[in-house]
Amino acid sequence: MTVDPSRPIAVRILGTGDYLPARQVTSDSFDQRWGKPAGWTLRHAGVRVRHYAGAEEPASLMGERAARAALAAAQLEPGQVDCVISACSVMEQAIPCSAALLHARLGLQGSGLAAFDVNATCLSFVAALDLAACAIAAGRYRRVLIVSSEIASVGLNGEDMDTAPLFGDGAAAVVLAADSGDSGSQLLAAHLETYSEGIEHCRVRAGGTRLRLEHGIDALRAGSLFEMNGRATYRLAAAKLPGFLQRLLDKAGVELQQLQRIVPHQASAKALRHLQAALRLAPDTLVNVIGERGNQMAASIPGALHRAIADGRIVRGDLIALVGSGAGLAFGGAVLRY
Image (cartoon, rainbow, N blue to C red; front, side, top):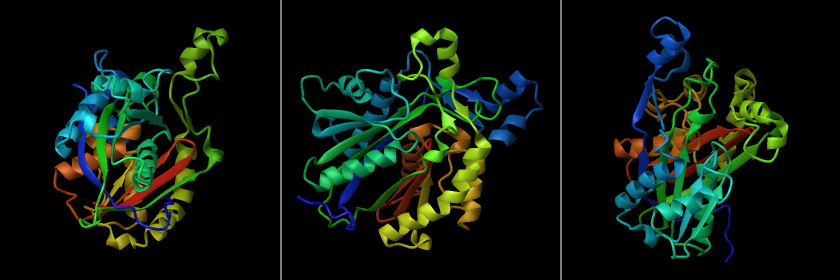
């Protein structure tokens, strides 16, 4: 069966769920650590509170909790999906893939049910959604569980005032299924672009084969911390995002004004303000949850989507867009009829 990329795909989000670690870290604690006036970190980062996972909350456990919540919303058991996709920026361990760890936590041992990872850094969920929808359209699967679970806190440099207070941990999940077309639920378009001139703007150099034990513990430790050139990232994103967004909308055959909600990657409060102003959006169009969660990397978009659905800000029939950027530098988005 051939899938026509110009045609909408009849798929439906059956359920969503999320998980936030128990430990809450307020911006006041950063003010105290750095000797700043009360309220400085909140004004600087735009994040009031973020959640940090403890040693007893590995990424696979957080993913399981979010997955079970999404499955419950869809009125399904784990064995009733055909595929599990882990869509994360950073794996829990190098081998096996994070999806296999999640598969086991969901009690799917012995089932043979497919499980694999998709990694497009902060755009992993969007990439996984696109792949899952295409696989459903091709008849490969009927229902797919997509889970993004991130522990950003382990890679933060506690003395970096730009990045340390920006990120938070958490997980979010979505159950995607084939739709008859009668309900109107569709993926109208998905689009990804990469501009690799930005590969050094946001990075974690360790964790793969680039930095090794033979390079020494100090090199591994330094390479394990997140590095970001915020100014260069912002400049490249500001230059490329408007054109990318227009190409996404053109593929979907919709105008910006037709969208009921835009669910963006919660990159930073500054980035969200820029997006709001650049697109001249009505105040309630953009789903903004960064103040209570921080940047949760790949879990940001599905987490914000879940929150908007749970709060009634997105209802059946709404035309919505998921939009974001990721290290690389990459841009990704999807337009759906929910």
